[in-house]
Image 1: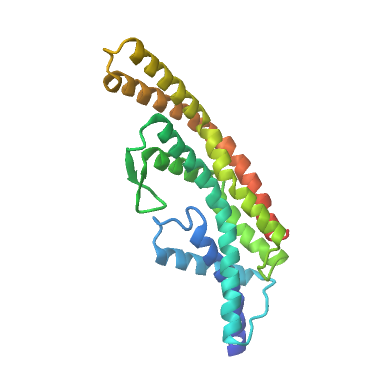
Image 2 (image 1 turned 180 degrees about the horizontal axis):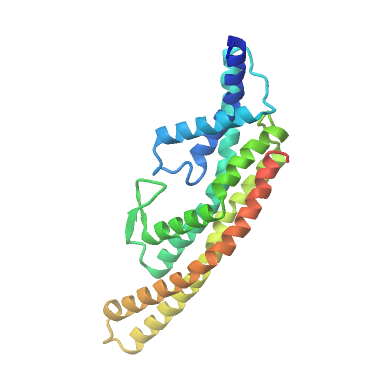
Length: 255
């Protein structure tokens, strides 16, 4: 088997485009770009998928002759892949933010632990809801949909430069982080307000009742029960978010 230098350079050029776009995805996408996955593994995995995509065909943009143009095109592909991966990150962040709002509503935000997305301490409920969002995202096939979107984007937008309308749709979709977080945390917030009102009224009518020894355990146990019940509503909310995210990714790729 004879492999010529032009053929080898052509194949490497074909693998360059999906590798740069997948690298952007691995920077922002949940699970694939998570800090718990070692960086060398992410690089090798991105290279493996890029080689497979290059073997299956394009269409791939022609590789520029100038080195500066190659670096500029790679940066564009990297940024476009990061935008695709950001859609999945919004889904997990929206679910995780609901846990943070619930911890503030129940007054247990002082209980912190090192989360997945950052080395800084985050509320425990934030970490619990983040794990829930990641598991639901995995169960719905989110990583596979993102890789499929990258492959499909080369057929509809090989240059990797989305228009202003699709970018505006992505910004509007980012607002789902607050909207969905409030929707998921609303039962906890309402229950926390009701229990705090009852405990405050009881403490006013019977001052001998210690609010810290009686009120706080009741608030904590009731809030945990409501949070455990609200976890069953995460999946349908995540499905709706994923459907909206697929529409946003289709808009970014013009397909």
